[in-house]
Image (cartoon, rainbow, N blue to C red; front, side, top):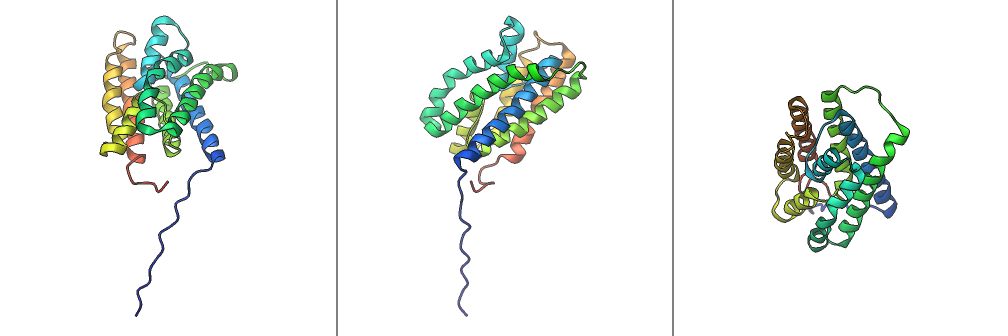
Length: 206
C-alpha cells in the first residue's frame, strides 16, 4: 500500500494592507493603555517607562519623549533585524507617540481607580504588542533587543522584558508613591506575562 504524503500547509505572508491595519490597531491599543497609565499616575517598563519618567520630571509630553528616546535603537534594528522591521517599528513608534497625545482630545475620564487602571492599561498594551509582533514590528528600545535575542538565541522576549521592566519600575520609586509603584510592578508583570504566553519561537507559521 502506497504511503500517502500529506503536503505541508502553504505559508502565507501578510499583505501590505494587513500590515498597515494591524500596526494602526496595535498602536491604538498601546497608546490607549498609555493614557490609562498616565492618568492614574503609574509607570511601566522599557522605553515607555523611560518616557513616563521624563514626562513626570520635565512635563515634556509622553509622545515627544517616547519618540526621542527610541531614536538610538534604530541602528540596532537596521543591523540586526533588517530594513522592513525597522521601517515598521519606526512607523509604530511614531503612531504611538501621536495617538498618545491625540487620545485626550477625544476622551476624558473623570475618575479612575489607579490599581485597576494600571492593570487594565497594561493588559491592553500587552495585546497591542502581540498584534505588532505578529506583523514583524515592535515599539523600539527593549522590544528590539528582546526580539533580536529571541530570534537569535531563543530567549523568550517576554521574560527578558519582564526583568528589564521590573528594574526600570523599581528605579522610579522617587517619582511615584509606594502604592503606585506596587501597581506599576504588577502591571508590568501582567504585560510581559501576556507577551511570554503568546509570543514564542515557532508558535506561528507566519
